[in-house]
Amino acid sequence: MTAATRPSFWNRIGTRFLPFADAASAELPLSRLLRLSLFQISVGMCAVLLTGTLNRVMIVELGLHAWVVSAMVSLPLLFAPLRALIGHKSDHHRSVLGWKRVPYIWFGTMAQFGGLAIMPFALLVMTLDGNSAIVGQVGAAVAFLLVGAGMHTTQTAGLALATDLADEDTAPRVVALLYVMLLVGMMVSALVMGRVLIDYTPTRLAQVVQGAAVLTVIFNVIALWKQEARSRVRSTVPAPAFSAEWQRFIREGRNLRLLVAVGLGAAAFAMQDVLLEPYGGQMLHLSVGATTSLTALWATGTLLAFALAARALGGGGEPHRLAGFGCVAGIAAFAMIIFAAPAQNAALLGIGAALMGFGGGLFSVGTLTATMALSQDGKRSGLALGAWGAVQASCAGSAILLGGLVRDALGASGYATVYTAEIVLLIATLIAVGPLVRPASEKSLRTNRPFGLAEFPA
Image 1 (cartoon, one colour):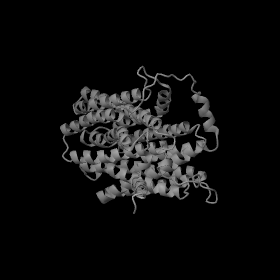
Image 2 (cartoon, rainbow, N blue to C red):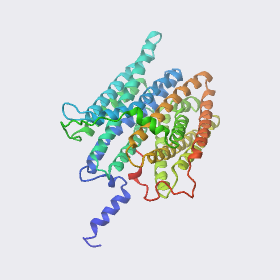
Image 3 (tube, one colour):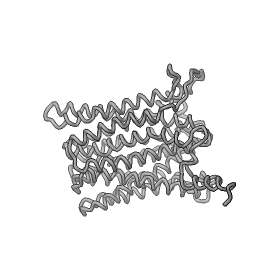
Image 4 (tube, rainbow, N blue to C red):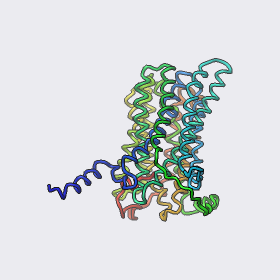
């Protein structure tokens, strides 16, 4: 190989084996992009704490009612519909220092840190009797709300900042990288926390939560450092009315049916969010570390689903059909989880958790790709994806609360009832998605170009 051909060879190697190499540009090199992605690592770490470790500890070790824990965990998810408003405000905001994204990311970081700082003390107070326990529960609810609000604010403004920094060609790849980094952060955090909490004590849990609070600030400060340029120019163009745009979007085509399918599927995959780890602890007698590792298995299954979805859609696959396959995988996953308890088979529970992440990943990619196609001209892509996020988060939060109520009302049998209800919801989702599937004779939405990171639904 001659020296003249060597650069071209290494460029091909980098693009083929480093899937995020093509997300970088001259204005946003890969080192700067990876540094910016640290805010996603902090969000993933907080997500593992809220929906994994802490809910299991509060239900099993602290003996709280599952509906109380479900209500706490659902508080951050119910804040998620405001993400569209946060993004809109950051688009038109200009601080005294000339920043528009940095103030939102910083205040989101402070909300995350404040919630995590309160959390250990609230958990300790909850172990007391009488009115003190109620005060602890209120403090924990406030902490969950602060962390959730901070996560959504930081993530929304952070993704917007990444889009601002990237050029038009690499922006989708950049956002795709940041989304995958969220899953990597969840997977790594779950493994580390699971390892640290093998020998559970309240003191060790408090140290883990406080460590997460400190790391959140460190990661986000490093991510923000010298990323956004300052500008004193203020836009005089008024923003379009949201209500009119929303009504027009809902009336077009079969958009409403797609959103119904998104809501049903989100509820189906989320109803067990606060129950999976307690289920493993109570029914299979697994340790805190072992049940926390279930989150890592879920994240691994989700990443595998992303890889398979990219290959399928790159070959002209139909996104609604892909979402349907995700529902089928979810049905199989919940059936495995149900039978894991009577069989006392921890391996079956782990496989079910991974398959649940796999099905949820296929469903998310399929519905997100279909949602992106609703605005081919790009003028309303933010509205379409905002609608997806609002419906998904609201239905997921409501389902989490309902799952906790069912478990408390029925006791140990409530776990199987919830997983059975999720199977029924997935069947309903298949019924909603079915008419949206395009016949094989029609052209795929993306047959004119390959599906890679550039086309990943962010």
